[in-house]
Image 1 (cartoon, helix red, strand yellow):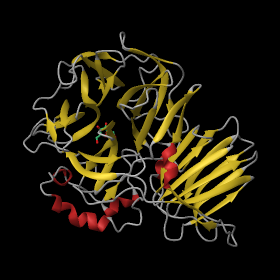
Image 2: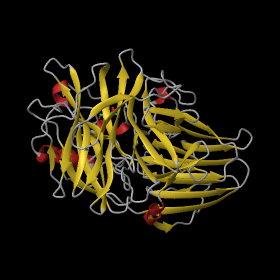
Image 3: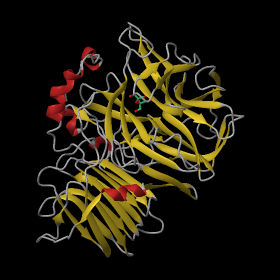
Image 4: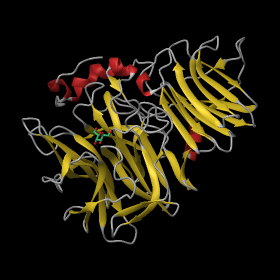
Length: 493
Ligand code: FRU
């Protein structure tokens, strides 16, 4: 693992050509994705500012140009007409080189389109010369010409009653209300995770602190809540959050989680009354900082995209000086006390050919580099071994046990392993058994949708040249498609 000095991590980007060689080198990696958005160079983390505007979807991601390191963060801009094929538009928000409010990073946030502009709300990560951190909530306006104009002053600074960990503004516009809200991830002085609410009658000014969000029963839940948001769909309120530094049952040694609580939000008393427990959004290994699109055309609908990665984890491509990609977009609905996440229907457009599945001596067929696998399952045990070698050894296994009524995803058989300290297998009970699996495989990731969105396992995987076979056993009906490329991996800075 490369050691980065502070100077290297926080080096300002002066000329795109500084990255040309790095890009050339990275584009040769066998792990570059074909239908998932990924860091153009360096590191990608959270998705930000997900909105529909000017006849296309806009999405930004946290981007550190230089390598696989959480250094100087920018907002990189990508667009799509259909949420399936995507284009790079280049860097949008850059940190201020003159010591301004975001001199050491343009951190996560959200967006709201008004007229022909998109308003971008983000955290200015400021460091004083003695490296004291100050968080500012900042605003920029993006015109259709693609140029962002930062407002000279922040909307507000950090609240003095909380630590400097105050970030990730999510802008919320309630239908029928003339008030806007912003929810911000924070930490109390006694190191408890929480969310702060600000409100204003105007998107561009007049923001006032309204109070700390009350979530009865969750007063002591991790030491910081990153990327909180409150979404409303299917007639319910959903609090999404990433509680940090807390261990949770079934989550191995992981300290960072992304989950949700269903409940009812009362904006007058700033109370979110939970209707049940905290659920993780994703049962896999690599998913964090999920963002919901802000202004969907159809009310009561929600689309979510997450970072396919987690903080504090070293990934195998770190040595190639890049890391991070985004999940596929998922449509959210609510069934009972759970969120259901389905791949967007439009993703069927990715299907290229349905392929025959001739088995070799070991009962394996060749797994294409980009593939969708769909299984209808009859009652009984099911086992799927992805990324095994020709002899059917190793790989990532998906095992459903009818007796235990649970599904397990185990990646300990992969030749290239990483982050093993957080555990190598994850389990999810399936009370009513397994009836359906839909799996998306890209060069270095796998997303497993169980029982039509009832559970999702998202994981990065780094198969070697030999790990390109698959074996399926159980009473199942199987279909496999090769998938078309959908991201233009262009060098656009
Ligand atoms: C979550 C996070 C955010 C922060 C951003 C910085 O992954 O730590 O809280 O704004 O990443 O890149």
